[in-house]
Structure formats: structure tokens, C-alpha cells
Image (cartoon, rainbow, N blue to C red; front, side, top):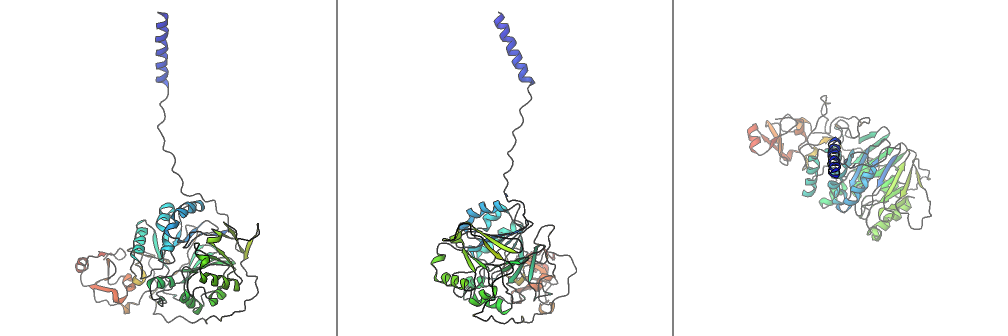
Length: 458
């Protein structure tokens, strides 16, 4: 009997104890895994030339941590870049530059943006692009990424477009310069024309500089030499290393890099054209580094010199070798074997429109190329860097004078676009006359299947 009472009391106490215990806390969701792992800015300029096989991809990280991705490599580089970029970034990319509509330069872009994000994208706005490239930029625009044009300002068509990433760090567009200067059309096919008109950039930080040559070809180099747009650079990102005529002697003598980086796969070393190029680089006393041999190349500048680190040392190079390249070139003057073409004045341009006084706004794509998104933001209207940095102030892009644009209709559009404008809209002056469509009434414009443009709300 006592045993039963003891058992009953024990069960009662156990029951009360259970009732007095606080409820178990609700299950909490594990914290979302960070997508960025980069360290704090160290006050130096970093340039990473990625090993992406047969393609190009490089990341610029400024002393204060602003970032620019120059090309995104081929689709085969997706896995590498979506793992490597988060290691170097502390937030989304400030700017992506696609130098040309070649899959070897943009194939991994969609995967990269999905992984790390980007705020803005600059691309050359060329007319002969593939449907796949058009679809890619449409997808980029749908993500809220703002699309920039490299066109020079209309009030100063002879000036170069310069993006101030932060005080003392500038990114200058050397080519293309349409509509101030016509695009190059010497190549017989669209691929060659697009490469010749790819974006060529010059990055400067105090005494040091890097030229990103995109996919420049012989005609690109000739035009840059003719216009006097080239000068010596500390580093050169080589363009089109196996292409006939590219990286000419005159071009290399004018840029005269102390170091040059070539991107490519295992076939790079077997190309006779590449072997000839390496000989020309030696001829201008430039050290060559190849991603197929050295892997990723990391260049760091303190404003006075660049120091390069390699993922894999060059075969035969002694251990502990320092690869330092001063910003102020200490090498003796070069005895030129080819006299560069003299600089000439650009062809006269049409009168610039009156200075704009209204606030900056989104404008329609320049040159009326087959735009992938409805609107393109002018680089002069939109800063590239984040708060605390600035972009050089400049007026809007070049447009045709109003006298050159027919104003017979009340509503106008490009035959290549699915939007229409008021005849008085500034965007109309950006449409090539051979592509111009006009309607006398708004209903007629709507019946064409087009929608009202967002900039003038016709």
C-alpha cells in the first residue's frame, strides 16, 4: 500500500514538474549564409586577372572598396567565378563592363549576377549583336541593373568619357566614341566589327595605370594611334592575342607596358601568332604573364608601383621572386622601330544642343542600335561609384540637332523599338533618320503595336 502511495506521489510530482517547465523556444531559422566574404579595404588598388580559359575576366577593387568587373569570361568559367568573386567582394559589384558582345567575354555573366549582384553595366551599344546577347541584356535589365553607354558628351565630343571611381582613381573610355566618331567597319563580318569596336579602358591610380584592351584589333589600334589617345601604361591586358594584325609593333611601342597579361587556355602557347606577340613584348622590354601558365594574376598598386603575385610561378623562375613595376617608368627611352601615326583632329561634328538645365534622367539608347532594354542611362547622367565617390560631371550625350530631324508627325519611333515618343522628345533626336517612323495621331502610334515611352509619356 505504501509502495502504491509513493508511486502515486512520484507521478504527481513529476507531472507538476513538467507543468512548471517553460515551453521550449520556437525553432529559429538559421541565419542566411552571407554571399560576400571579402576583407576590409586596405588603401591599395587591386586588379585580379582571373584564369577563365579562352576568355577574359578581371576585377578592379579600389582603395576604398569600390568594384568594377571587366568582362565575365565564357560560360565554362561560371563555377570558378561564382566561387571566387564572393571571396573578394564585400557587397554587390558597383559596375560591370562588357567590352564586346562575344560569349568569351560575357558567357558567365548571368550566373555571376545571380550570385553576387551588380548595380550598373556598361556595354558598347553595337548594332550587330546576336539574339542570345540581346536576350542576356534584357535579362540584366529586368534585374534592375542600369545599363550605361560609353558615348562622349555632346558639348565636348573631343573629350574622353572618364568615370571617377573615387578620388584619384579614374577609368577612362578610349574607344568606342560613337556618335562623335563613327564605328570601325573594316572587318568583313559582325564578329570582327564588334571586336574592333569593343570598349578599351585606361585605369589610372596616381602614377600607375592599366590598359584593358578588350577585343581590340589592328584597326582599333590604328585609330587610337591616329587620334593620339594612347600613352605609356604600367600594365597591359592584352587583347586578341592570337589574331592576325592585333598588338602591332607601333601599338606596343606607344603603350610600352612594363608587364602584359594574356588570357587563354592551353592552346595559347601553341599559336604561332602568340609566339610572335611574345617576341614583340620582349622587344619593348615588357614581361609577359599568361593565365594558362601562371593561373590568376593579382596586381596591387600603392599609387607608386604595381606588384604582381601569381597563382603559379613561371617555370624556371627562382622562388621568392618579387615582380615590381614602378609607375614612373625607369627604363631608358625606347628607340622606335615604327613611327606612330601622327595625331589628327577628329572630323567636325554637328553643333551641340543647348546646355541642359533640367535634372538628370533616363534617356533612350544612343545610336538607335537594336537596344535590349527600353531605356539606357547615359554614363554622364548616372554616377558609377557609391555615396562618397563621384563621377566627372558632364552634359548629356551627343544628339542630332533638331534641324536634322523631321518633325512632320506628332508621334515618332524607331522601327527597331517597341516604344514611341512625342515629336518634341529629346530621345527622338537620337534615332537614325533611316529608322524613323512617324504618326499624326497617338491612336495611330498605338495601333502600330508600340507602347508610350517612359521618358516623355506621349
